[in-house]
Image 1 (cartoon, one colour):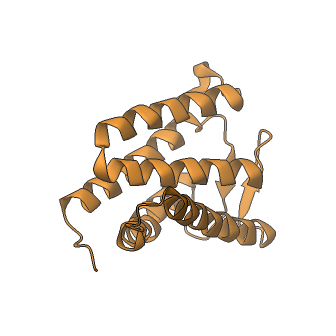
Image 2 (cartoon, helix red, strand yellow):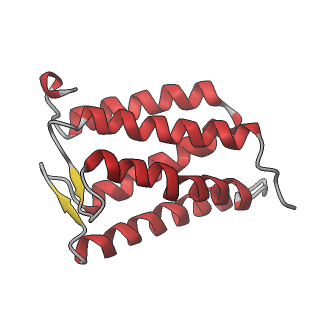
Amino acid sequence: MMRPYGKKTHATLLFMIAGNYLVTLITYNFPLWDLSSELGGHLINDTYLNVVVYPPTVFLLMRFYPNAKKVIYRILYISFCASVFTLVELIEYYCGNIHYYNNWNIWKSLFVNLGMFSVLRIHYSKPLLAYILFMIEVAALIIICKIPLSGIK
C-alpha cells in the first residue's frame, strides 16, 4: 500500500535538512569530512544535498518502511538504508570526492547514518522524541569527536 507524501513526510524532510545545517554549523571550524565538487564550497554542497539528495531519500524511507509487527524487519530496513548511504559515501571516498579530517572515517559515518535513519523514522510518528534523540546524537558527536565548543559557529 502506497503511503501519501503528506504533512508528516514533509515535516520529516524539513527536520533532516535543519539537522544537516546544524551539524554543518557545529563542524564548520572543525570539519569531520568535506565534499569535493565542481559546484563550490561546503555551503553549496550541503545545499545540493538538501535540495537534490535528501527529499527522495526521505520519501523512499517512508514509502517502503515495513509495517510488519516484527521489530527485526524494521531494524533490517533501517540498517539497509544506512548501509546504502554508507556504500555511496565509500564509493565517493575512493573516487576522491570526500575527504575525512579529525579522525573521521567510514565506520563513524555508518553509525551516524544508522542514527540518522532511526531518528528520521521516529520523527515521522513522534517528532518531539526525535528532537530529543537528535540533540543527544549531536552532543555525542561533539564529545566523541572532541569538537571544541569555541569553534562552533
